Image (cartoon, rainbow, N blue to C red; front, top):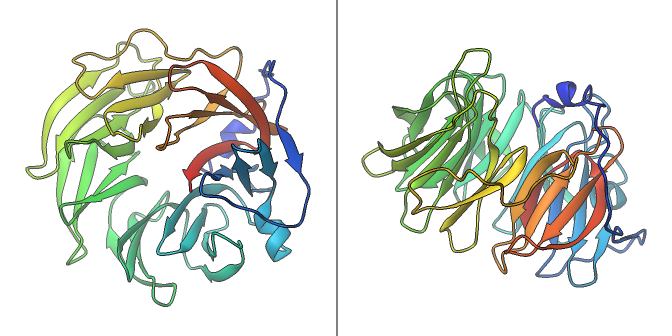
Length: 344
């Protein structure tokens, strides 16, 4: 996660137990993708420059490792934070390298490198020619000109900005360092409002009814419990708040299924809840068996659940696959600290 991999690299206490036979790992130089390919963001170790982009094919159960390095004959960089595909281009956000690599998502050839960023986190396309990029340390959101892959401006947003979402002509921005969701008018690029919610929001999703769900991990040191909020994006009103019972709760990696009616998140284990539920789930949907669940993704096509195990944050991680009912399918090896999934 953040340059947070600095902290994660110290967590050498647990070694994951793995019973499944890992999928085979292809060493071929020919990069092959299909309509079912799953892109995996492997953060790598902070300041080691060993971030990698892997491709998994569920049909053949094969992994193509480090396709960026294979294609471009150079490393991707330091801490691969997130990925997005827009208008036939892949945007790879590399946090500690302060850049975004723009690639052809079929060939993985670099088309441009966007520099001048501080600690970029997440990319959001606003129009065919404009995108926003959140930042860990810059106290602003950068504006990108997608026509020439350059920085074209910025929007002042105090603190560490994280995931963001576009709806009704507004960009809703989560932030890890206060109790606000920022609201930006995307026509004028002006911060027009903020919504008071729980402390330290880390993820934001939109359900099938157009409502926003924001997950906040709280702060144990500040004595603030984690929380989950449902927001009406038209009125900016908080319609529902779910409070986590313990200061030891640390929910994150909020995900949603393809029907946009079911939420998933990590809180040591995996939890699942309907958008119609009136209370938080009390029983884990998938329980850890000494794994360190660090990444979570739901394939929108058939609902397959992907869980990334960071193992010891030093050796290669493992990705576990589950059926929508939680039954295990199998596992495969990924890069160091696998954290994010993008479904082709």
